[in-house]
Image (cartoon, rainbow, N blue to C red; front, top):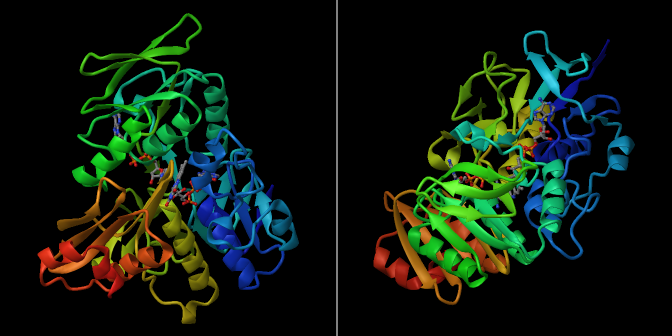
Length: 427
Ligand code: FDA
Ligand code: NAD
């Protein structure tokens, strides 16, 4: 048994949704395009899962956050796909791929063939078992990657109202889930191995601001240590976590966010892999001409960084790489290499920050850290290569983005530090 399509998108996440929109805009014919996804719903804006979805009142629920609401575009509901003749093969895991034969085989044994394949398999959450700790399958231990995880997290939170939670990991998931737990009136202890939160991006001074803010909301930080084991009750529920430094933290629930691995395994022996992702060129094309890769799974050249290959784990790059791949497929003569400006953001409590570029070189920090109006520039080889701003307006965020995009030269670092945001606003 088998089906054949001209275009197949493997994976039904953010990148798949934005690719579908671009295919539709470029006039893909009915029946030509298929999306295969392990998830049971059409593509949605994954960032909602750690924000609006976890609110105690009036939480976001599908269909309100199907792609592409994140960019104020059309909302791609199931009806949208039907109207555009795009086949959705949902609740279906692809278990093997053959890029020479141009076929995919699903878990139920169906063969789906393609002329052009877009790999948009995203990533999976790392399990604590991969760090040698057992027991994260307990009913009150949560990860957060997909809708099923988010539904589970909500129900565990509801059963824990007024209680305690331990959050393992001080990255994006840890920070956003800790804020959501507090908003749900759950007292949080955060545990992570680094000296401060968001260690991949924040400077110690920036981290201090957010940690102080979290502490003012009752969050307790245990830094520089890791989880070594869980304590369970007779029904298998976790009742405490034991840390490497010997601390025992009693808890009613645990949320784990300790990073991700890109879902490359179907293709590792068939396509070039680099930086933990599937390597593509500036047109999102892999080492096989008929296969493209986009989103979290793609490792692509970033022009701004001299063509360095990067794998970015953020929604903006998923959206833009997906669109670019479709442009390269549907309008090859008119599509050059992607010129992407890396962009990350987060929103927690009433705070909100944006970052552009890369956090490399010397850092200049400016503004008033006590009032939450501050930012930072990263200067490498005399030019601005990265910029961070908390609580900016649209115009201010655009200004810092432009300063990074233009790699503005810095002659006098003390003067830039003094001018702060004004420096970018004058570019
Ligand atoms: P994504 O993970 O979205 O989709 C991959 C899809 O492929 C899934 O549907 C999966 O089931 C499917 N799949 C994988 N293997 C398969 C197989 N073998 N067969 C069938 N289907 C398969 N970023 C940001 O910039 N700002 C933010 O605020 C947030 N917030 C945020 C919150 C949470 C909770 C998460 C988990 C992530 C974020 N992110 C984020 C990151 C952002 O969501 C992420 O970068 C994008 O979702 C990546 O999009 P992709 O389409 O590449 O993968
Ligand atoms: P992350 O890479 O942001 O953070 C991982 C954290 O895990 C580290 O900061 C570290 O504190 C911790 N850690 C690592 N090993 C550990 C160990 N053995 N024990 C305890 N802690 C350990 O990853 P994440 O927070 O899991 O996020 C997952 C993915 O979701 C990322 O790709 C992220 O970009 C994405 N995401 C992004 C946003 C956003 O952009 N606003 C929001 C949520 C999720």
